[in-house]
Length: 436
Image (cartoon, rainbow, N blue to C red; front, top):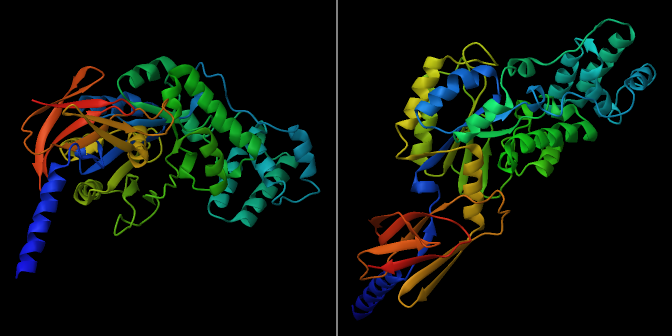
């Protein structure tokens, strides 16, 4: 009996000690200590995204991410272009040498730049087959294309893809204004190609030149994120894009993140990963209750980041959704912002990576707590405040937090571990907590 009493007292002491630990600080899983995160993203930059959807978002004070095709914007420096040997040489070689793994990427890259109407479809079809791991079928598509080219089956002319054409009507000045309202703008390449069908030179042209136009017109903050068209998960394409952009919606192969792409029928389910990226893409056939259920799942799980992918709006763009449905859906999301952190794709990515790489140092200096949260990531991009929970020592009823000489707003709260302050803190800058 005495032993049991001693064990109970020891447990009680340990609990009291842990509660009394000065400055025990945790980083909340999501900013503002919400249950989960939601990012509303848009592909292609079709004109009604800005004329119709963006005002709805602004009215609700929701910040979105727009992956835009840069080559069609007036004032862009880089446009559709084939990088490589003279196209006439490539065409001539197809008469005697069938398409194979050694020449496919060059031929598929040139397919959309032949100066002929109708050839771009072959580039897209071949790229789709490569994305689906059907290379032999893709080779046959390219052979069929160049056979028709040699026989003069196509009319001369300049051709752009549907996504490229639907994006016409927006200027860099307008995009700058939208960015100033808090929306994230990210690259969707120069021309919206099938990246899986491009050779190295043309792959890098699409990625790097789009980034340069984003940098020149918007600044370095808008060169963080990108999305390879069609949500490609082709390993070769993703590897090239990852050299140019720190974050891709296509793939985020973090060891602590379970990825569910928008084409994947999987659900968050059970996982040993700390975070789940749950991508969902509503089409005209998606019931609104299902779309709302994605949100409900995010709220209930506490580990989920719902990444919504939208395209067309009110008749313009792929799978265009009506404004009434978007208003209903976004209003539903906003009604739960006490449980959801609604933020751009880039901000959620930055928060998770900062949190996972952060180091917390706590000092007790003359009765004050000095806390520094630091991380080794690139400070040009990774400068998002983190939400901290600092447990107060026993006997502290009130406290004040300052950072860089400014008072930090803090919310007193409590849980089973004791009383704590919940607040936003800049990384790599010490903060001081003083007992009042």
